[in-house]
Image (cartoon, rainbow, N blue to C red; front, top):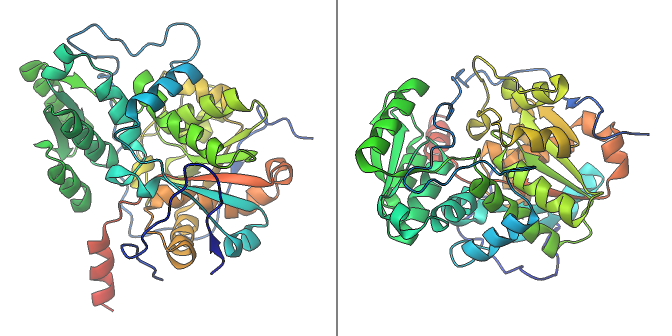
Length: 394
């Protein structure tokens, strides 16, 4: 297959038995890149956006505020502090590469495999940093969040590692595999209706009843700093990378990655990958202000959030371009991950590869100026039950 692992610090061998092998250019002011392939993903239902609007900045019990003072909410120092804080609780994930995929793309790609992270996604980094940064008085009340995805599991696991309660508000239509992860990690599940208003209302009630601290999935300086440790590791493992492609949703991951990477190498290029059915970040970048959408429609269920007031300034200033891809391209990238890399990757995790494969990227200045590209594979929590059911029906 041409699969290889680059040599360097922080890399470790992987067990493959659990994986399923199926199936002149001004970067900052240039309009974002777009991909509009024909076809649609007809089985994906349009869903309203999950949001934490109205709950931002409410770290109760100790007066801790998410505001970062002057400048951005996080910086290289807070990201290095996060790296030291979370080191005992997270994996230093491997970097994989493939000569087969390199030949298809025409560049060297280095996959930072957060699909092998604890809880199956990078979210454990921000959740651990947020939870282990709490003082004992705050932590004694436990933590609360509302989520139907990887953030829910990450908060449950990080709270378990600290030995405190985790109250997780989950809508009734959440994917079964992600609900099971929360149960597995000992999170206390409180069900809500599917609407964002119901989720927020239940979450607020739990806060008032318990005094638990809200752990925000992206619009928080501790979350951003924790996610930025992905970038520190990647550039330690492959220092020669000149471009990093990062999935974008609420912006916590790409904000941390951009802040760390640009501090280490100011000339490095940061590209966001976003689904066409939830392209608010691309629209925001083009408009110069936060744009929200009435609804989203994409297979990438982890990329439906909108930018927050702490993540938007970083995206505005430090993200060089946004590549928008459709769901067909995401599915093709997932298939390539399964067949060549032998990795089970969820749609949100495969979008970086989809962006690297896109025609618009290959026709851009960014592609011509890049030679070694880091791809953040953000998660591997795939609902395999849906896959098995579809196979049995054939």
